Image (cartoon, rainbow, N blue to C red; front, side, top):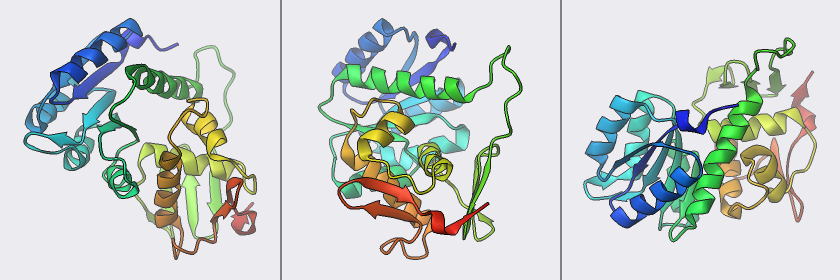
Length: 244
């Protein structure tokens, strides 16, 4: 099991009260490698120096936008980026995920929820990693659905034969649908099974991730043929295009 003390968390926010509150709650949750920055410049330097596993990133910073900073952070590794934002419109959230964010929480927020989401992320990584005494696991799958292929082992999405960049959480959500083609999942089930947060997330997070997937795999994202909405129930990946 992952030692939470080994997890490095960077808090990028210019409000000292929020930083102090998050540090207190995270320490109580067992996280002790905590770092903070209050500007984009400080955050870039911090990420280059420390290589954090998780970044809690405010969108509005004194010297720039956390959205633009997010894409720059990806140049120095692949941390799990969770936006802390007072901007909660679908457009704002969509922009955040487009820039490479993995999750978001709107202000004001309960710091215990932040700790819970981080712990859920760690549990997901543990469930995907082989253990020392584990019998050899089967090869992760390659899933083909018409115009796209997703390679679980290599973490790669190909659309019409071309690699398409895919943020981690978007990849995990699409992979989940690929493993259960034709099965309808509600937003609550997706939050439980993909995010690992027992259905306690914001509905718009799932909606935005669905939209991001459609923008990558559909010919016409506004008229999807692969990832379908089942009105009143949830979403499913059509089995019609599955190649066995």
